[in-house]
Length: 156
Image 1: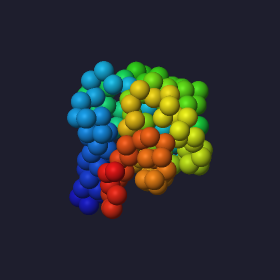
Image 2: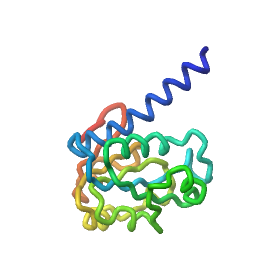
Image 3: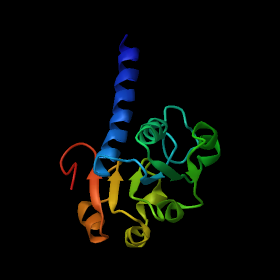
Image 4: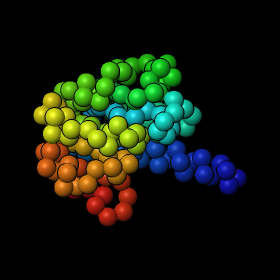
């Protein structure tokens, strides 16, 4: 029973991430383009078992969003699991024209993004940092409205 409860709580948490993204889009994701950075369960692997991106993609698709994604290693494994998601060649291509940018997996490459370049190419300015990689000041300096998870500074 404990394992079943843990699995249920984890699933609810992943769905809550999808709702957080929709909320950052003003509560309506219909017709919006969302860029996901990181699809795998953890960085430096192509492991998609229990990856939060699976539940996030489902929640966003259910809400009417179009999704473009980039992952340094996991796209080949992820693509058959999310056939309606367009896979991009890099983070910048994924973000181009997006209404929201979502950091799902904390790959080192995502810690060094040129946020100003990304913000300039996007249609919207929502940055949803599910791994709390970027400090508020850095995100705001690039022109983003930052949404983070948990603790202090959850939304800024």
